[in-house]
Image (cartoon, rainbow, N blue to C red):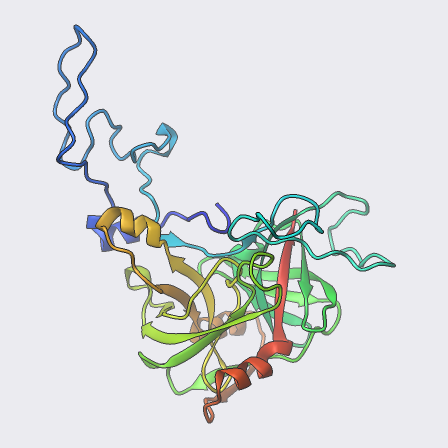
Length: 329
């Protein structure tokens, strides 16, 4: 699935949370009677609903047996809203994103591999940010299946983008442009991020449904590891929605300390434990991002964390460096 739909975690999740890996039948609901003349149904094994294929979720197609509902969502890319690009946002589905109306005059140049006259439609959208001369970062899942990619910078220019390298394990992608897009952000080189430290996100959640411009949210680093004790991630309380993925996680000095990547599937968790978790979101740690860049011989700006600023000041400082990404297919 893309956008609001979820992605199944591997066996690591099941090992970390076995109590959440199965649905348990309602003890107060009687088993359905079999057809006349049919032998009575045999008792189902513990944890399995009578008549259910082992490992299958109730209401789930048999082809998906053995795959429990995911607890882990990749919140982006946000799916594009169907219909003409100029259609109004009313009635759009959550996470939808209308494609901006192309400017009048000469069409934008084709990206490498793009065929002249080939029909393209906007599939999804996400966030990225500039890290150097004609280079930017985002999540791998934001650009994974794009036929071509367009970036809109703070000036409103529509810039063709190519993917230089991807890392599916870290969920990172290094992007390149044909032209300068804006000033680079600075990565924090120290001190280490601490539990409880205040952070901010800056990106384009639910573009076309919410504000068409960037959104800033604030929160804290809740834990120094992610789901199933994933040491590549921070858990954060700053709200994350479809369209946020690939955006920077910032400290109070405006330095990058991570990249937004995913969120807990609160609805799925509520179905299993009867309670709704709140603000459980995840970001790739800055040290993982810097390792990815070093491996690919990219040297971003780095600095020690400086004096704290207000959220307003940080937002104004990073605004020219954050990109709205459109995946075309």
